[in-house]
Length: 304
Image (cartoon, rainbow, N blue to C red; front, side, top):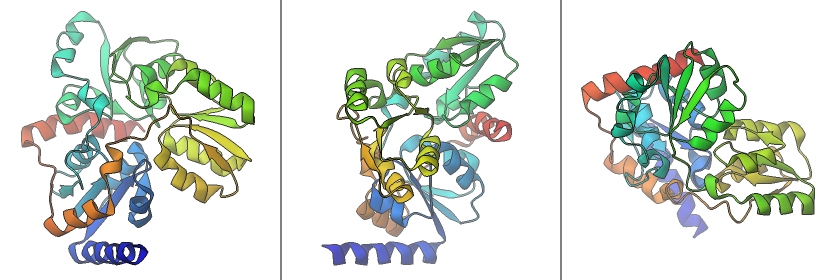
């Protein structure tokens, strides 16, 4: 079995070179996919990597909205995704109808979309943000009112630290982070005495338990700096591949209530190989939509 995996990796690397493909993988992807990728990162870092790509083709090992974002930043490139069925339930919680009347209902309002949204929602937004840059960007906006979508938990986390703005929240959430249980995390912290690392897509109660709260990149940086005996990790298990590389002697505990992301796990070596052979599935978007949806993404990059 190991030999078969190595042969598959060799085939992927050969195709990558032959077809001039940049392979991007999110921290939540399977470890073997992260291992073979050219760039691994959080949503913000991967957006920058996509924007700066010189390759003819980008293969995004993540979920659909990430592939769409790469296409919006590179309209002339071919953007591939290993499994077109890898979606984001949070992104699916927003409809264009949710944005109707927002500008009329609130004076001096900015529509701020988490990058975890589809292209059509981005097209109706003023700026996009990630968990890495949301604080900086929202603080810099001149608007008094902020309509933040879709993640109510990330929005609340930002709102609690920016006092001079009024936040209106969409009621979306991550179906995995939102259900991390406060009682379980508290029990683990009391039992082991380890630092708690929390992604702000978790509820405010879980965030309060965090010794480090931030994006996947911020959590990794914290592990790399501190290298403690152990950590309780309140985010998707895919991140453990990078954490173990940064601090191999540490123990990492994922609460049982923090479930793996089913869509991220659709990115496999087999799917990656097949998409490179077929050059599909490909992310294809309407040109008019791309022009409108790229604006808030480009504004995010400029303000970061």
